Length: 499
Ligand SMILES: NC(=O)c1ccc[n+]([C@@H]2O[C@H](COP(=O)([O-])OP(=O)(O)OC[C@H]3O[C@@H](n4cnc5c(N)ncnc54)[C@H](OP(=O)(O)O)[C@@H]3O)[C@@H](O)[C@H]2O)c1
Image (cartoon, rainbow, N blue to C red; front, side, top):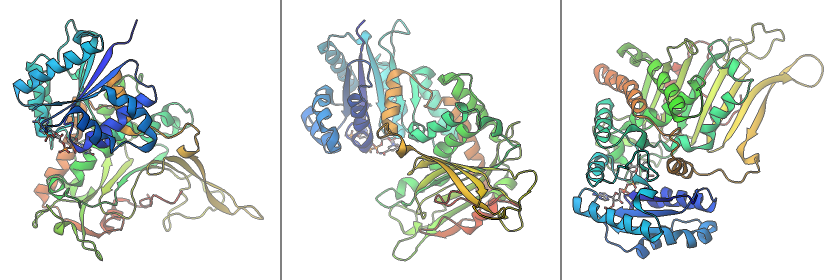
């Protein structure tokens, strides 16, 4: 049987995300021969332009080595002027989509449609309402070959209440199975490699618990500040809501979850939700003791956060947050999860570090780590960006007389694989959405649980009048965050050293 047609309808076609990520991602899939059947892309936004003009704009963002593929792919790329909030415009869009699929020899019911909402978040619900009222999100009988799915961009809400309201609004018009909430971090190879490393190797899983792991660190560090017009948006959000609620907690969930029954969405997402529930809500005392918030200040020639364009002069928004979180379950009880993220930091990197406990007896008088603390030789580092690698720190014997120890590392670098470049995150996730694989997308209850954790911290700050520490641009954040490592737990990694 011939595969059916897929129409990918990008609402927000003239925007930044479409040009930078979505079209290159779709093209990448086409060049890789990843689509199982013909694909049409229909861009929708209010800006008046022709299909030819849109193709011309998009072409500027295509890498030179993809231009040959683009020459044929663009024949299936169309532009449609419409206001997604106006009934009449959406009715015309429906006619256009039906006409385009018929040109390919398919009826609308044989055509799968993916509606990608590349719109600002306040438009998600109103746009879905109109699409639904025009009968564009239903397929009868259900399930039918002409599936209908929605990809919803981030941020999904700004707190628990707004996320619940958005979920309720969407669910008035579509079923949960039709909604693909995207967090592009889950499209990164090394993030998915956390699952492969844990569950396809027999050696790690027996150690992956509180008996053998002393602490887990997750760092998502950025060098950029909020320059370039991002100040106003960021000032409403801050590091906790902008990064922890999604990227940091998604990585945490993959590190901490129980082995799922299968890689199907229902099983993986079920396990992730359990982790979020086990995170528990921090009390005000815990927030005061276990969370550090800070903002960057003027350093050398660089202006501080308060002087950035769009930032309110009496802002209390944090550009850095570090959290000593706990997971209250059998596997992780007693193991601190040290999470941090910030802007204008020294190095851009994302890394997970699992530090193992000390050997039961120090037979060989190994070097002490952290002052008088005894030996902690083993750490597993999963580097997610910019390097993509896995490193395991070991102690070995220094060659020569005596038993002198030396730290060394077992390394795996993605660059060493001869599989060519890894696919960009959006490319992978777009393909999954077209194929109906929701494993790497966020379920409605998952996003709500993540907000519940974040809201407890935010509310604690508001009630406590939490202090806002300061750090210089180009450092790794405020000294106060060092205090989140306690006793002999060590120190934050630096993103460079192996042990
Ligand atoms: N850019 C990124 O790298 C990035 C990263 C992560 C998440 N996101 C999320 O992705 C979404 C889009 O971001 P963006 O940066 O692409 O925003 P953007 O550049 O502001 O684009 C917004 C798009 O929405 C269209 N639009 C607005 N109102 C419309 C309406 N009533 N009917 C039809 N189209 C309408 C605009 O086109 P017209 O004005 O021509 O109608 C424009 O194409 C946001 O939710 C954002 O948070 C973006």
